[in-house]
Image (cartoon, rainbow, N blue to C red; front, side, top):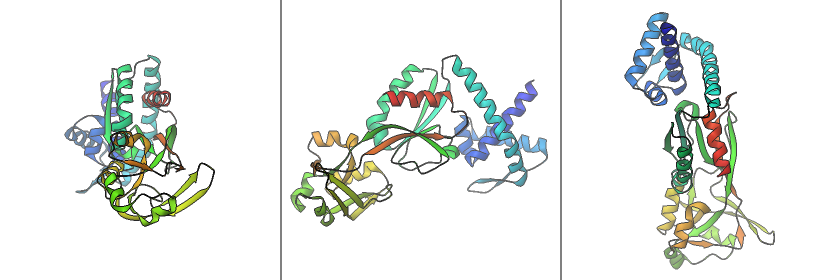
Length: 296
């Protein structure tokens, strides 16, 4: 029995390396050391008499034998994990590690308090939080849930809408003193714009008035960033104006560091989604977090 368990462990390590793309990433995913991962793979290769990976300085790539083994054993291992998860979830206690990623500003401003309450409900569950403004590869990085704004682009993932937020046109008082206050959406085209490059169309915005009139404006970017927090910081320093998430600017607006413009006009609302791999069986810890965030 112990020999079978050891073989299953080596196969699980092999699958983690194959799906993470490297020994270091697999070690982080499994919560162990790179040395242990390397040793398990070497032993498995010795037992099979075949090289499973081609190793380079940048990454590891499956050999033909590795591809065959992964294709055969990965689905079975995932089914075993799902079965264990189903049995464990029936006991009512969540265990293990739940890896969650979200943008820096949303994680700090909105998500962290909710995650703290969720963790208090599940003391045996360890949360591993990754703040990143980039769209990460969930499977490759071993991430269970990503909290993302906007629309879902990867059709291999599932998404659950958690909430909506407004977008405000904002500027610093110093910028408005130097460049004037735009009164109509079309006047924004002559102003300096700080663009969020994560968006599909970071320079084109459509405004709707309270009476239903629509205006589409093309902005002129003075700076771009893929980080919402950086965009907000540049606007706060007077570099230009931009569309900022309502949940992120409340404190700056209350303390006078930013001014909301064009209050009679609205931008399209944006959504916050919980995104997770589209496995046949969603782990109980993922289901629990998504349900909690929807209710919160």
